[in-house]
Image 1 (cartoon, one colour):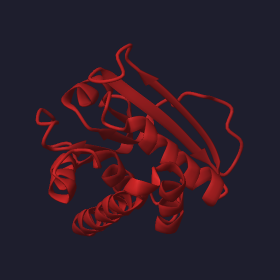
Image 2 (tube, rainbow, N blue to C red):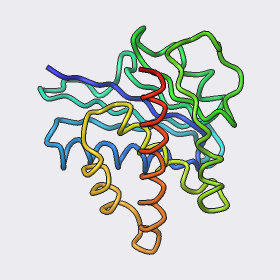
Image 3 (cartoon, rainbow, N blue to C red):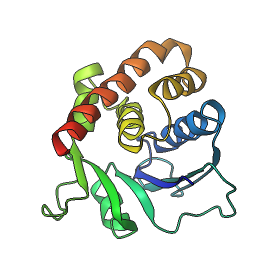
Image 4 (cartoon, helix red, strand yellow):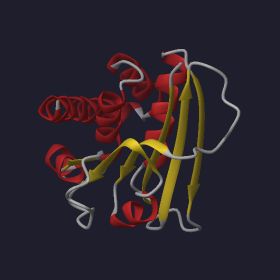
Length: 184
């Protein structure tokens, strides 16, 4: 039986909710798994701490909340500070190393990526940080295929931004594959 509990966290405006929706649809609609997705964000949508939880299971799901994450994505220092203790001992913490700089460097659960910098390199802004994260989470989690992730992206992003979003997800796939290969 497979069960995964994933938490995405960052500041409002970083696209956490869209990333969670894409991941949930990739697992639920395209990979035929059971999924629950929930989100919480501050009163002001931009700038305050936000989080989205996803539970993926091949069996029934009877809860809306995760108990402790298998994978935690932190796109800000505030997100890391708030959630890094909410992870399983065998879990993985993915951080954006531009924004998350205060963490235990000896914690072997941490995978560090320059996610916001990759987005700046791709498009001159951090607009695609969330979709690069989708690519990374797809590879690191391994719960569904790259093809399923791309289908979910196509369904959820505006058509005029589809090409750049596909590039962003593919960029996430590639950096995650390299990092996972290095850590094996």
